[in-house]
Amino acid sequence: MNEFDRYTDDVWDRFFDFVSEPVSELSQEEVREELTRYGLDITSAVSRVQRALATAKAKNELAAAREKRTRIVEKLTSVVAPKIEGLRERLDEIIAGKLKGSVQAAYFRKLEKASDEDDLRRLMDDIERLDALADIDETETET
Image (cartoon, rainbow, N blue to C red; front, side, top):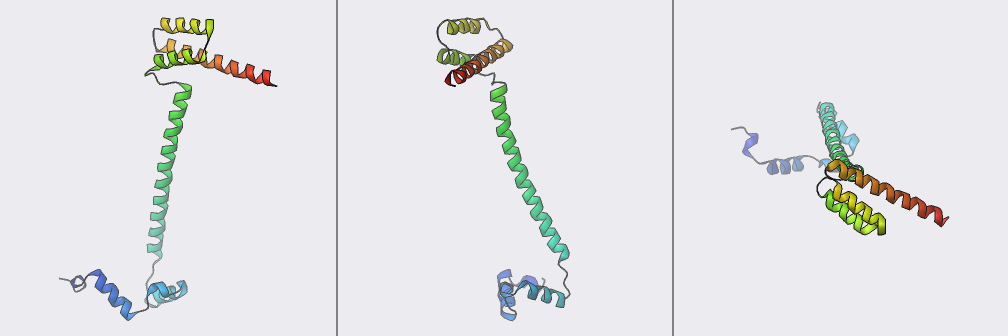
């Protein structure tokens, strides 16, 4: 058994606090002088700590960037290419809610005839363009 293992770290901490000044009360210059006096070079230890801090910071930044990327991709996918699941139902809701009269009837017929995903996407694009044109018309009439 090693003599140092005989006592716990708490006991050693109390012993060193008793025989020397607490490090927390020393200035940085005094700490450097003590290290130099004992011939201790902490350059490699400091660089390891700095590398560890830089690595931790980089990992946090990477995790934040991944999370941000996920949110952006989800947002873009919903805008650029709506999710396939429930697209027919979403189109039905949009047509019923936004469109009126003969335009609504025409789009309901197109929705009934849509046979695959491409037809549904084209119908969604048409409705979005129609909505964009309506927004432009409203802006022009306001000015």
